[in-house]
Length: 122
Image (cartoon, rainbow, N blue to C red):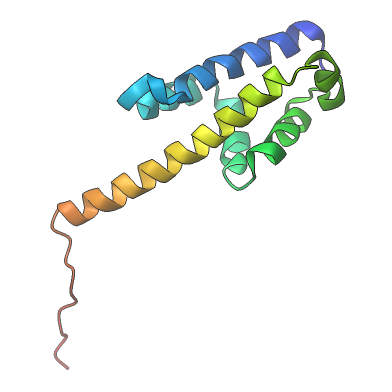
């Protein structure tokens, strides 16, 4: 288990992540996320795994992976503000990855990718 100072540092890092992922951050969200991940490589795989979880399931998963006591967090976060922020951030992360995948697919079509297959002579 980690100490309180380490836990507060982790929560601060994820607060910054939630600010980056907020839709009000605009078009730069993807670049800001990539920079945040470059600055915090220890979270990349954990956050990638969260793409396959519901936001509600992702928060306890992240707590376990980061050595945070989820039950202790729940007691300190009696009104659910921190857990709610984390769930919103995970939901926004998932949405951003979906948007990015759709934009990448659209860009491929816009670049003139063939829409029909050529017949191969045999």
